[in-house]
Length: 207
Image 1 (cartoon, rainbow, N blue to C red):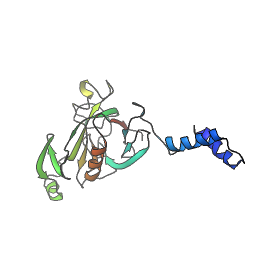
Image 2: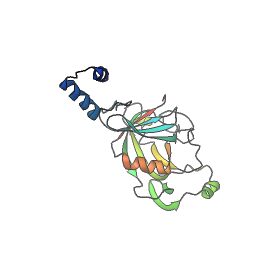
Image 3: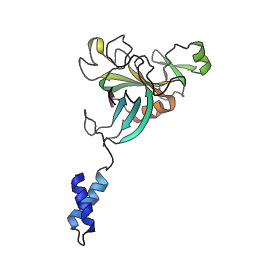
Image 4: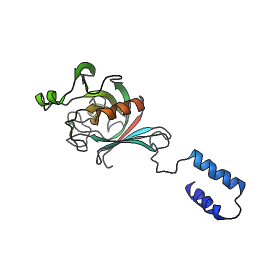
C-alpha cells in the first residue's frame, strides 16, 4: 500500500490525475496510518502493551500498532527469567488477567492484593528501605506460553508478576524490582484506565 501510495502521490505532478487514483489516495490517508506501526503479533488488530527490558520502557499501542504512550519503568534487578523464586522478570506473551486498586489515590499501599488506608511516603520508606512497595494500581499478568511463563514452576500468575505503581525512591530506567514491572504512580493510573482485562502484554528482553 505504501509503495502504491508513493507512486500515486508522485503522479500529482502530472497534469491529469485519474479519479479512481485520487479516491485511493484519499482512502489511504483516512483509513491507514502513515507512521511506524508495530501490530500485535499475537492478536492482530488488537491494542497491546510492549515492555522493553533492555530500554526499561513500557509502550501502549493501539489497534493499528501505533505507539500511544511510552513510559519509563523498572524491571527485575536479577534480570530476566521465569522460574519461581528467581525474582526475575518473565519473558514472552502475557495478558492482563486481573486489575486491582481502581479508584485508589496515588501512593496508596496495596498489601497482599488488598487496598489499604495507608499511604507511601519517603519517610516511611526510610524506615523500611528494603520493602518492595506495591502502590496505587496492580495489573496482574497471566503467562500465555505454556512451558515458558505458564504452568509448573514458571507460571507468571502464580508468581504474582504485576505491573504496579512504586515510590519515588525507585531508580527509574534501571532494573531494581523483585520481578515485577514497576511504574510511576501517575503512569500506572493512566495505563490501568487504558488497558482492560485481556490486553496482551509482550515482555521483550531485547528491546
